[in-house]
Length: 131
Length: 189
Image 1 (tube, chains in turn orange, red):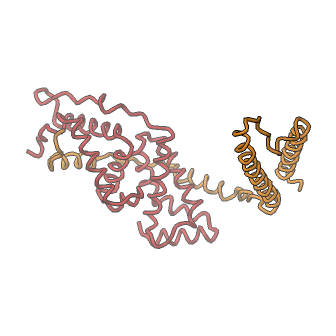
Image 2: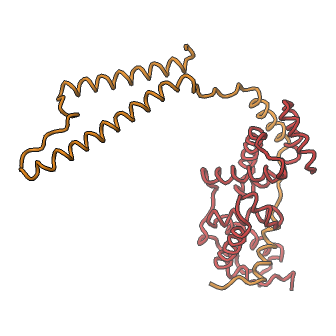
Image 3: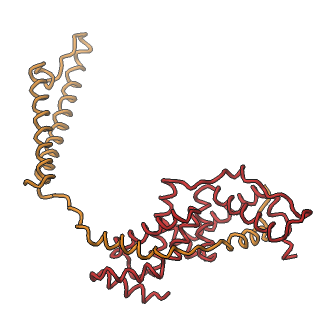
């Protein structure tokens, strides 16, 4: 590639500095001010209801932390349980969290559905301003 | 255009007098519409983009720190908006390879003005086909009358980065339009 010479640069400068100017249309300022007045007249955006949401957020955070702790404990127990079993060639024992079987899974699923339903209903009530 | 007029209008708007914003619009409508036009080369769209820039300026007026000149803040805001608008809906451009060099009309009857016009429009089309970072650097630099500092502030870039982009952008132009820029400019001869 040929290097840019001073003459080239001057040429490009001269061409690109001569760009045509346009004039805004006559109603431009009026139309901008109409939009600004509409903006000023619009009610301010509704702030996020932190006071109402905070208890839910705290509960959700605690639940998440609990699940993590239980999960880590279950994995640790699984690790303890499998190490000697490998040497004895016995089938691994499932962790306590999995002991409940189908009945326990159904209860957890129902509880999750209930929590989801309650949170949807609650947010719909908050959105419609009935709270 | 006086900076104190801008400051006085901003203070009135912030105190609740919306109509004071009209002074800002009237002072800066030309530059903002023209800057938008350099980005999109579409008159209608440039007015829409400039209107959106004014609306954003109105919404964010309280964020203008008075240690910077109002126009610098306004141009930086508008430039940001125009760049993201162009990324969202790019303007129609042709690729650098497809930009035809104008015919060599030195031997024909066409006048010097026609030849200059052809060459200038080919160079401008080539600028439009450059990668965004070089195109934006060139657009802002020439819009601000080749003032590196103002262009760098509008783009939110260090001056050194802008200079490097300008140099590289011009080099690409030079390499893509070799014949065009090699033609001696008869007026200067």
